[in-house]
Length: 534
Image (cartoon, rainbow, N blue to C red; front, top):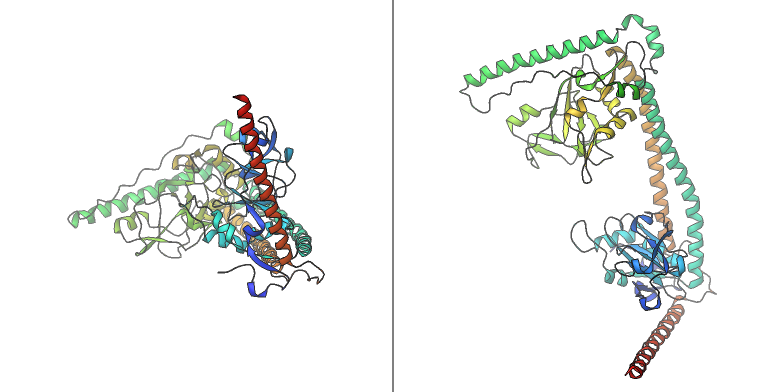
């Protein structure tokens, strides 16, 4: 079993014990001591941040509202999220001062109440460490999606216990080092946000025609009017349709000559005509330079097609790209499924330059896109839409980049249909996207400029990601040193942990004796009152 410490290497003044030896796990509350109208703090699961240890106790409820169905806690208790994925994400915290000394929260919290001589922050840093959480995950029980860390496992898990004074020194050192780390992490995350803003600002600038202002001045002979461009696009659509129609007729003849074996080839649909963009939409989007025009995306394509809904296999002749294979505007070739069905391959085989649009996904991911670049023959699955466009008039990367711009995402959010944890943008809605088109020559220049600048942003983002990872690793290595006795020096004058444990045992015995006496006194009072009533 991997632990954050090696038992045989802990300092001699430390002791390795079970958590329940120094913490009360899920302590009970004597509810008869509280009035129903008492105001108490209330902490739902979202009020505890992942990883940071921050907790919001500003919520207020009356005792009557929370005395049933919630978990009670008090100042200095450690809250430990026991359910997946909250536990794995690090939703743990030390409870600060709470209203009237009492708080309640989700029943998905375990409560660890540190005993005498135990620093609760020492316990928090131990149970919130990545290695501890990995062990907790391996010991979860329950159904998928509802797995929980059982209290008996938590109680029995080993803790390396230093002397009381050394606990305080360790906590102080951790907090000092984490303070520096947190400032660095905050700066890195700020830089990440700024890069995202810059990326979108760059795309906005490009698709307003501002990135190529000088190019248009230098190349007036390459410019066409927006109306001429649209006519040429419509002509391309017609030619593409008639070409596919002829191919279909040939395929039908071949099918008939072969005795009509297999399915009859599907006749291509005639390209759909689209109504103009409404005045309301045109007013909501920016004006474009001469030679540019806003039109519905449907005019730029010969149609949109959904992918295969047939069940795929774990192996086969052709990989089937799914929505999970689209990452950051590109295809990743892992976690693949396959098909060997000839009819499916003929119908859904991708062509280099095809732009695929994710029509169904979580609200924040629906609408992500990628270009198929012909790395290998592949099909596409049903949650993806292929935008059938002529690359002679619409550059694939121009289309791909525009669909990832803030303007396109904003429009997608306005038309998507929301369900439980999923959103959908169907083919008709996609075809109605406002699209800023210009000449193919200018599109290529825009793509060239954007790819150069975006690749620089990608490199910077990767650097930031790696630095954040290093900071995270440093954080975990700091905790490993802390719980191995290597973060601060040992002081021979400190009371050793074995004496601390004896104090804890004596205190527990005292508390249990007092509780027993109180219980007996309560029973005696109850009996006396009953006699008086009779």
